[in-house]
Image 1 (cartoon, rainbow, N blue to C red):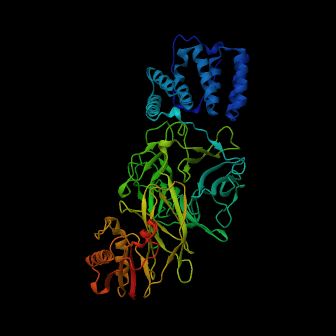
Image 2: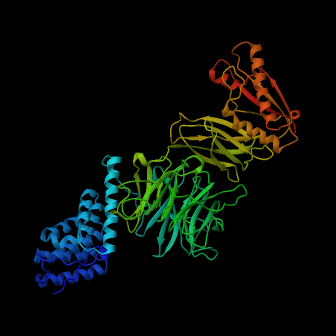
Length: 639
């Protein structure tokens, strides 16, 4: 009698190996038990693993030494990702005949690793590799798993993973359904969630939900013209909720098999998709986009030629002319000879999460992060570790603005059907930087009309521009910032005086929202602004390095408007002698003029005057008032 064995599909690479003097003899299995075994295999071929396991359990009741039945029970439990059930039955098989079982130490190890028992998994696969005359596929498979288990053991020692509790929570019936939901995308304030849902068994459409009083509304198809009879998926919503970039496959106007498209949030819903063009898309597969919080960087995965492996992660930059730049590969710190995909750039604009099977990990597609450093270089990829990563293939992951709340898709035991959206708390050491955000409106000071404008944030300490954002057509903006820094805040628009302010945010609490409306003054005679990012030490008139950004903005204004003449006015508080304050304020104003003439501005267009404490704008009785009175102003003399 021949016994056909059913076990996990991962075993197809293992060549049969003859073992002499076996204690277990398949030919001596009870015919009644063998008949149940054959019926169980038929169930398994129909993916009815529960039915197959029931028949096999009846078979081992008839013949308790039916080793192949235990192996097949273990294999079916493995297919169901029931690792404890698989391990239990592999162990029963091993107890019957350890020599016969040796061939199955590889799938046994995989299920042990699935449960997180990497030490035992390493012992099992090491025993498997002692088998003589293993074929190349079997040996390579065993060595790959051995390397993965060793990595898992070392990682756990370094990161103290036992202290972390991984407790994913299903988002419930409002978001999930009997079909698959995946690829979550979230706005910066966490109020809007967009998902991809598989409908009618084959079509992918976008559904959206809103958080109201801490609960999600029922997800419904997005309004507008974005959903079609074709497949739309793998989307990213801009942090302000105004853009949706996504993947469209086999669209008529596409450049390759799958291209990236953009849709805009309008009063009538989401606009019809627009292909992002040949600078972004290629003749190959382009997918899985994510937008930086300022909407200036578009990261995505592509299998185009010229990369490091099968699919790599690329970035394209939004240019001042409204076009996207040629896509650039992120380089070898992120990309490998394997496949990288599913990028997600956090609101901190520094931390990139992505999947990879090329970096060392747990055996499949793992989740990694890389930090952006100086000059937009990317740091070494860091594995997120078990149990976020498992022996299975991990998919897209997004992190809310708070830096700790993660969302992903999984088919866990409490799934409503297929893949569901879950949330969990991210481990401390793999979290992004905490952020806060500023939102408001840029408008004409005289007419109150909203003005589309460019906004730039500069780190005062490093003078590095950390964020650039374009307002929408009505002047509204939203920008996220890493905490712990102070910033210069600049707005420029042709025909207006630039706006500048500085924010001492280094001591502000994370996840805070600041509302700043920005009035712009038309460029005309007598218009004036306070240069809030001009800095001097106490009682000194030498410009501090932090002033450079603001001074350069003033230089650009004068360069781009070659007919205007300005006066720089210096002001102090009332501390000290009035005559000393007049001299100090005059010297400070003169320092600004010297900087501008040094940059090439005609001295005939510039004048300066010190007013001392004679023109206060606040009460000198308080330190806050005195700080406002210590200022440098720029006034337009003629246009």
